[in-house]
Image (cartoon, rainbow, N blue to C red; front, side, top):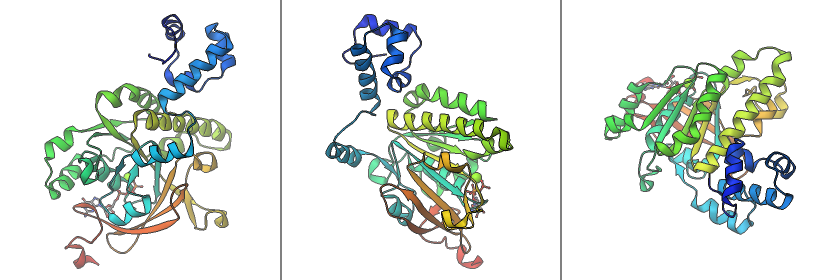
Length: 316
Ligand code: GTP
Ligand code: MG
């Protein structure tokens, strides 16, 4: 570990105690004083330095604007969808895509795994993708199909996507914990968790396990947001939907699963639904940056597009 302005002896002490950059940055000076046996001034300096290094330190709004302008975006392959998102899926934050069965969440994730590999001028980040699959729906054949339609080097596209199947929640945590090393080692610029909701919803059943479930969701959300900021990567997670009993809150008979605690974690939330034939409608409904708007796009043989595929006309 390297911390600007912190002497070697203290760094050794920090490492012996098992602290990571993240745990230092999110600690308090009282805890560091007692665990590292350093004085208050030094403890505060350690925290500040760790926060600086992770990019979670306070900055002026002007600086914030400059930093925001530099952030990368991955195109969705639909100009309309990119438009409502402010250019695509942004780095350094968490984007949630919620929607019902067959609404196109997984297809969008596949498309993004391909697009992140494109050079910046073509809407990519010139990097690789890491796909955490909890539902065993990752389809290399589908990647081949989409990449072929776009005249890309199919073998290379496949080589640049790492797939990890997460069997249960614990397994999901252990995969996420390995990402701090795996992301820089493999030049990962996009992380997909498809589906983020499924294990939490199937393992923690009943009211008496709700608190535990929400705690786990918050823990993993925090880990993901730190990874996004620290490594300057885009993260997309998919969520299921549930019937909305209090329709007035969300204004729709359905709402994303996982409840209120989760609802505030993603910086962008997209709700996707089926429309006619292969068309889909995405609504950006919770963004601090962009207004609530809808986009129409298509899911077809060639992946995500702005216009229907020629053969779609026969089925519509
Ligand atoms: P769940 O995971 O079940 O919640 O759904 P999802 O939102 O992930 O749906 P997914 O992205 O798997 O979208 C499924 C839909 O995409 C299908 O109903 C098809 O309309 C379309 N689709 C999937 N694969 C293909 C394909 O190979 N060709 C074409 N033309 N369409 C496809
Ligand atoms: Mg899916």
